[in-house]
Length: 589
Image: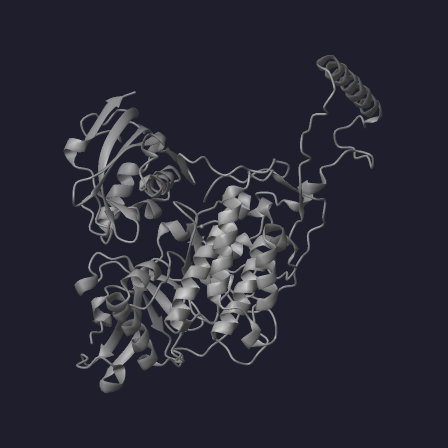
């Protein structure tokens, strides 16, 4: 039996790396993990002295995942990418001599190490003000709001997220782990290169009947029975997630939208909410039906765009958030302080497809032409009538003026509130928000990766399975530079990068000064290969900068076209290690 213990004094300057806090603990970044964790992207959750936690139950969680890697490598590899699981005990006092805390009376467990959330699971939107964890609660809103955040998620992607979440929970159940507080605040998601979920606050999960912390539930996500954190309670809450994800609503239980996707899924959601826990379906059945539904959707022709009907938004009552506490189960372990979320003014918006175009058999080309002319004359006549009776002033309002009723459902970029839920672990600048009357957005092009401030074209390497993920990393990196968010840009470097010492304030300051006037454009990922140690990514772009900030050999250049081959590492996501000198070239514009 092996178990990882790490002394708290080996985690560096924690006060300078505080990420957030909550009702049960504080989360810190670990810039230079010690021992076998060197080079990993980790966070440390430290329990508050007032919190009652079971150190032996926490030890069981750490040992469970360590053991799973030896007994079921397939499930370990799958879950490792979908859980921020405790991987080491952090202690003060005597150095432990036995695996279990109960056998080390002079040692005090203060918390645990876990994987830190990477950029793929973060939302960077100008509407939110700063980078925040990309929680599923953002998707429980009308499409207009999610699109204003830069999230273009159609029903196919929502279905893929549910498949991934169901597969994760099903695997946990097979290994006697229940989630317990299963709600959107504890579920993060990514969209590229493929939709995937990430469960946080894993120390609140129950393993083989043992709890590290007292079980709690989120408002509007409670089960009717007294027993908590059971497979049946997880199923109950998963049914609510499926319902509300397609309803685009924080609390609705209406099954209409889910039934429009699949009557089998709606029936499962209905069965999942019955009061008798023993009558609810198992997660394996949910997974099977979800996969069948997805396979059937692939065979169908693309659905027409959906348009919201005129409908007044509903304002939910204030559910009372505690700032900066993200919820009863502890803080978010990502880059920034958790954020409060005000009321959510949206309710699920029913949609009707645009009317299908049809041609009437037996109508000649001449007849159709005459019909077009008549239609044009009618339109002109209507226009003349409207013009004649239109108010003379642009500021005047007539009760008979044509209006776009659907526009009232879409928030303006300046006033759109974040999503609402009763508590949040969430603590993201993405695409500019669409205007209130913009048409429905299409999904992003398959050969482009977008982030706030930058777009990366990867058409030349689109057939490489790594392309989208690498391009997305570069979009965030260059976008952060363009938006002068240098702390976020530096996070694109590997912790051991030779370009900038991420742990040195002097090195970060020097790098920031060198990039302080740079703007990158025309970014394209043109090559991907592997040298056995690094992934090699070739990027071309144009940089504009002030005189004195150009290349070392021509510092007064204000415009240069670059081609750079980067060496990338892949520790919980692609990151830049360095760009060897022989892989860098440029020409003045």
